[in-house]
Amino acid sequence: MPDLIERRTSAQGRPKRADVRADIMRSAIASFEVNGYGGTSLDAVAASAGYTKGAVYSNFGGKPELFGAACRETLLATSTSLLDAVRPTLEAAGDRAALIGPLALAVSTVTLDGPLRWQLLLDEFRAVALRDPGVGQVYAELSRARVDDLVALFETHPYLAKLPHERLRLAVVVLLNLVNALALEHAAAPGTLDRASIETVLCTFLHAVLP
Image (cartoon, rainbow, N blue to C red; front, side, top):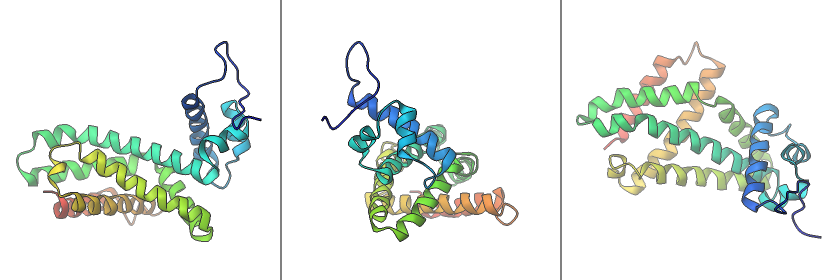
């Protein structure tokens, strides 16, 4: 029996592997956003995408790996949108001090108005990782991959590429964890951590790391 069995057929034959992965990914993202990590069923993800569960295992390996891929893709898209939004500010900048306020505002806007659901899902996945060594390994790989992705993304911009690679990498590690913590705390206690406070925190961070 083939490793990959799809329910869907077409006049051209079996779907391409890349198309199968994309279909499953879309279904998984939708399911995780609605049901959370714990409430998502691979059977339901596969059925919604139009394939058997074997297709999920063949393409992703299991539920933790599927979540890792979905989380990485979703949050990288958010980071890419952020860089696109601040690109004009970075390119027009002359005075370093003039950069900090607009950048802090842009990051805080993405932090508070972006896909908070995925910050919550990441927190849920992290909690499972602390109890399950197998999930812990996938979480560690996801964490490294997210740092790699963001470093590579930032290094495409001439201004941010001025930072030495290791310094940029450390800044990315801090930024990812800072954004996660700020987003969750603001969602749970907005009266304690309001938008103005978040912008102040981000201004302090950017002042410390920008070249």
